[in-house]
Amino acid sequence: MKRFLYVTALCLLTLTANAQVALNTEGQDSAYIETIKGRAQKIVDGLGLTDAQKAESVRNIIANRYFLLNDIHSKYDKTQQDARDAELYKHHFELASALALYLTDEQIEAVKDGMTYGRLKRDYKAQLEMIPSLTDEEKAQILIWLKEAREYAMDGSDSKQKHFWFDKYRGRTNNWLSSRGYDLKKERDAWQKRIQEQKAKEKK
Image 1: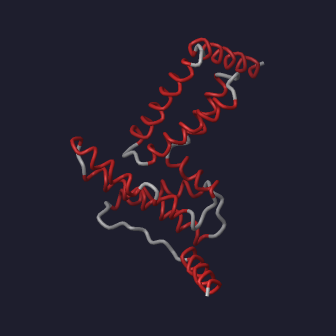
Image 2: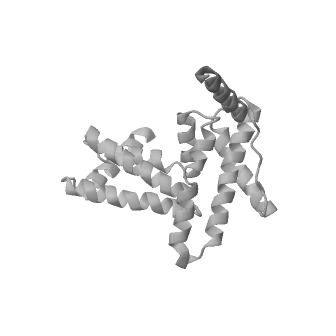
Image 3: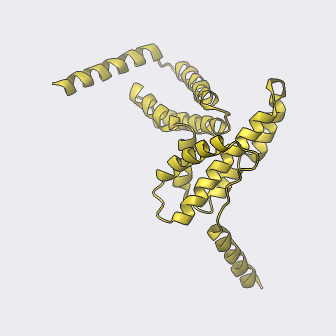
């Protein structure tokens, strides 16, 4: 009996993974639909998927996510932020769950980066280059906060709001590093000096 249930569940999972995901365009402006399809396709192009059907399903999952976010943000005004945030949280984990049927964990990370302008990798790289003496513990904590910022940024209504979350967490990180004894102005000035020196070497 247990084997039967296991095989049945496995078959259902396989059928679900092979099913084509439809593009949910109901109520969306035609120009906006094309913009979002292009935005989602650009993210998919970076995943290196060779199965055209799978790639289309992933594109539609991402596009549908953008449509949902647009609907939620359009529904509430500035005085209804708590209600908006509650609805965003309600749907937050649906994207990763849907993508998990088609993508690896690494590819899902790439989708998240694509939806947030690659800020996580860029900010993490900059932080490490600015302060080469960071300990492994400090690097890990910075990465944790960047991933947290990315989760919030993914639900942002536009690019400004997405960047806002990374800037907010950068402030938190800087305050934390200052409390640990780092002179951030000194570190930043030294980093800029290293960059200028490297540029000068490349010109020779």
